[in-house]
Image (tube, rainbow, N blue to C red; front, side):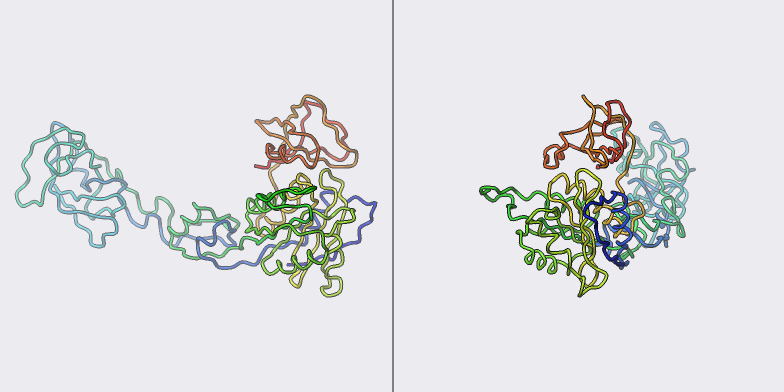
Length: 440
């Protein structure tokens, strides 16, 4: 992890959204690769191409329960004139010693079992009498005598083409093919493929560990009773869930009271399990903005090159922001504002890309598109600020949800997009094409 010494912030200077993000991504580096067991690697990113060591399937096998036969022996078979074949035995999945199927013979075969030598095709059991001499499984009947000396016989009522119901060796992937590319995120299908080709471990970048904490003496945990002037802590739950959604292993820390020493001590205790620390609240200019008080000078003496820089950004919501590195390992820390919408929008714009960068992904941003604004009236935006309004996106159009207030959590819960209003635009009329950040 590299570190960038914070630059002094002019109190009147507004940082651009893009400039702040560039600083973050220039500091955050992908985590070092490790070898993990397959299930432990779920959600991680491959760091190397994976080549298939053995073809899938590794041998010709049956895709049906039925009988392995020679094509000539069932040619012309019908309900009126079935082919009658000697049953020489059973072929089960995983069977090592295989029967040989000769002229006039059939072997009972199970799904996934290897096609025995001599056999050219498989007839499903539904096309036969099941070896019982009582007609097809569907109820039709045929009459025949079993050849003398056979273990049994089977009536086949339909012909089969060569290699019908046979999964060919290598029909999925062949030995030497590339199974997965470096940069692939391992989900259940990818883990299934790795297991199928015999890989028990895989080299990946681990999922980043993200510690999330709220600050504020007014915060109460859900299920507790509210006192005068108190509110429930929603930010730490929202951001922990958002970090997990981004691919991280996230740890939520209970709300920390407005005390700088307590906050500093709590953060130091959490560094042992953190690749990234996210705080919310206490980054503005109020008398109790403890995050600024606790972290403004962290590392200046003991950890050269680390420290947290607090800035004002030309954006709404989310103007106050903090970013830097702390502790002996220069762990990155992002300090977000405390209003619920401000903190969530800030997470999407800054924290999510940082998490995805730690994972080693190339594309770290939410997808963006253009959409037609559908609204009852024009949207207004403060001059010089890039505004991010909540919206719902449907088939090329986007509608605003709720107002611009940064406390409107209910409106946030309905939104699946952010409407972007550029810094130099103060009004957006209905029908105008706008940029949209897709959140889901």
